[in-house]
Amino acid sequence: MKRYLTRLLIALTTLLLCSGFVTAAPLLNLDLSLDRDVLPAGQRETAVIKVALNVPEIPREVERPPVNLTLVLDRSGSMAGDKITKARDAAITALRLLGPQDLFSLVVYDHNVQTLIPPQSAANSEWLETRIRQIAVGGNTALFGAVSQGAAEVRKNLERNFVHRVVLLSDGLANVGPSSPADLARLGAALLKEGISVTTIGIGNGFNEDLMSQLADRSDGNHYFVESSIDLPRIFAAELGDVLSVAARRISLELETPQGVQPVRIIGREGRIVGNRVELHLNQLYGGQEKYALIEVQVEPGKPEQQLDIANARCYYENALTNHQENTIALAQVRFSPNQQDVLRSANKPVIKAIVENEIATSQERALDLYNAGRKDEAVAEIRAKSAQLRSQSDSLGFSDLSQEAQVFEEAAETFAAPALPSAVKKEIRSESYKVRKQQKDY
Image (cartoon, rainbow, N blue to C red):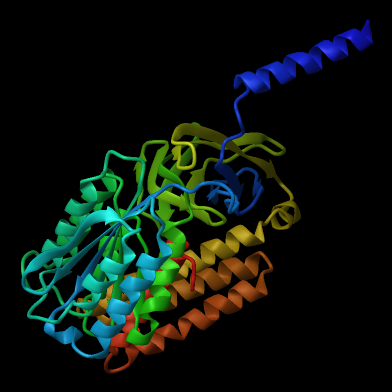
């Protein structure tokens, strides 16, 4: 009888699998981890929850989603010489990485904006390369209009199942049309709602790093500072490596905490806190890469040995490989203890390292904003205060290497205290901090 039931169970399982009734595991892995799994009992505490999103490396034999790519290239007068030559080479590098199923378009701009190549299959590479090599330099920099035009070209195929991306290259200040960081941030936020990300590549020391980074940040794109034009083809190849590995898109993350646990802030990322609920949105996730958010919460006193479900999270997204909607859930728990050694032993070093790195990146960007506003003394004080706080926290948990990292950060205060902060240093600070906050791969 038992043998008969076993055979019957195997037969039913096989039938369900073949019929598609058994749902495959979600593509995306959602994981919640705490800076400490044990909190001191009997006192109000602050904890940090790391919400990690992971997608496995996509095997080469799996068909990737097609790409709808628009390059927006600055051809203003300041791009003359080696810059425009390398920009053309970089555009051709990007084109050659695409397949016949992908769409390619090209917008060029100076004081005027022109669609040089409307959206079409990347298969027609010989003609496309000829058009790219004909790009010549011109006048001023209508950056806002150029990005808007690039988005319009992408929008022509928005309803189809493409990965949508605009890649902007500029070496100068926006001086035609809307030109403030706030203007470009609003444009980026609007494009994100349409599923369009903008990657910004600033070349040399003449561009506005605040404008370029905010446009990328609000649209969930990448941001690069390229000091020498010789690096442009490599950077374009790296960017296409990300675009061609998109595995999930239109990601919505919702985290909820119970009564007695209050979300306070999101460290390093844009998001929304409403009561006991946190909401974050990403446009895409790349295969083989992790993206995460750090959420600080305030926890009311717990009783000794009490267990608490401190947060639960749900992530909704579109599987870019199947075009199906999927979701996944995760739960985080904490225990309260009167024993301080229990608390120390529970410290999660990888989470705390992520906190230290993101606090440094956020503090450095805040200091740069203060410096640019003419408040140099406050910028220096910001760095010294944050460094002291991070050193104290790391030392209390016994992580001397993280304390040393915070100590090194304090040296940045001397950079801000100097008579002048070079433009290249400002751009490097903004770019490196951006990479940390957004977990952008370093190429």
